[in-house]
Length: 130
Image (cartoon, rainbow, N blue to C red):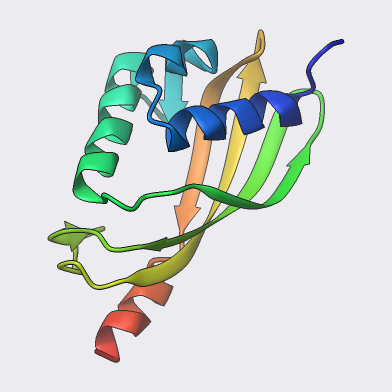
């Protein structure tokens, strides 16, 4: 049975959530670009590992998932407590809830381009109420 891009994407999210860094290369291409900038697999992996160190309760929760032959679009929800700063904001362990809209382009069954938009305004609004 051939896996759809939606299946591959769910595997990728599972890989992130379980911090199974050794298998990340099964989902992300060696030459991966993030928001228009070539970062490569190693730097991409290091960035995800750093996120999990700085956000101990990080969990990627897929709320919307749409895919075609080459692209996946996803809305991810987060409810997390980052230590220190997050996106340049002084979160310092406060629990914040926000979403991310992200698009992935696949080639050869692996992610090669990612475009991500985080709802930073939602975090700013929560911090201003505290």
